[in-house]
Length: 203
Image (cartoon, rainbow, N blue to C red; front, side, top):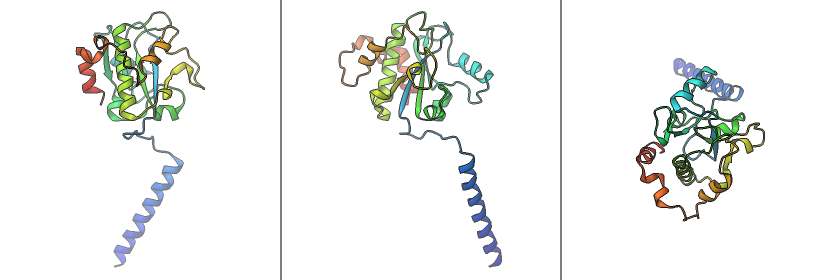
C-alpha cells in the first residue's frame, strides 16, 4: 500500500515538472493537419539549385532541420526537371519552416521556394504553372483563403525583395483564384510527368 502511494506521488511530481517545463521552455510546435493557415512564396535568389543543394546550404548556416522551405519548384538546373516540385523533409515530418524571420509565421506558414533569381529573370512557364497548381492544391486541402497566400517581401516585419521584382504578382493572384476557371488544361502541370510526381508527394 505504501509502495503504491509513493509511486502515485512520484508520477504526480513528474507530470507537474513536465507541465512547468512546457511553459518555461515551449516545445517546438509540430504542425498537425489543419494547423497550416498561410502559404508564403519565395525565390531562391540564385540562378541554379535544388532542394538538396539548399538543404546543405541551410545546414551550414546552422539550421539543424535543413532545408528551410517545405517545397521547392525547380527550373531545370541541378539535375532536376523544369517545373518539378520537390517536397522537403520539413513537410514530410510536418514541422515548422525556417523561411521567414518571424517564428509564428514559420509555424503556421507553408514555405514554397521557386528556384531562380526573379529580380533578374522571370520564372519559366513550367515553374509558374507548377506553382499555381501547388498553391491551389494546398489552399483547398487546408482551407487557406487567397488573402493568406503571402509574398515574403510584402510581409510586415520582413526586409527583402523576395520573391523578386519580376514575380508575376497580378497574374498569379488571378490564377490562384479558386473561382477562376480560365486556366488552360494544356498549361496545367497535372498533365505533365513532373506534376504526376507532385501529386504523389504533395499530400
